[in-house]
Length: 143
Image 1: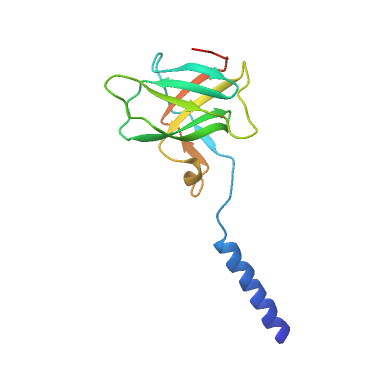
Image 2 (image 1 turned 180 degrees about the vertical axis):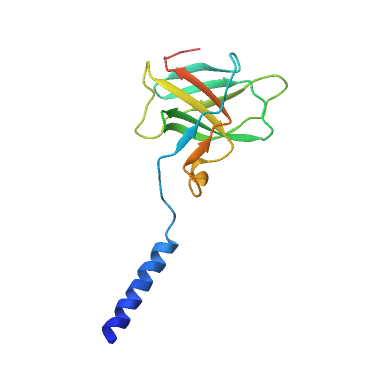
């Protein structure tokens, strides 16, 4: 009887610890193609293996959007960026690859602009909607 109580208490503590731990699931996300940006609305201003700067001439109805550079369905760089534009000027986004990653010359990437962080989406789905998308082949480019 005493052993059963100890086992039940241990199982309860393990369950409590598992439920209170931070959610860290990292399922493979499907980044659905969004509206393709028309010619001239997004372009690469400068690029190196360490960072890419995009010029974006698209007007959004929010102050910030989540930007991802994707290699297939794998994020190479990501983060929140302000999309506020002054007049008719574009906004600039400089994206550095995640630790241990780099941009590779000749490789095709996608810039995906969405309204949510993929970590928020993965709590309920493995599908992420890109509101706007720009496909490009990486080439080093100085100003």
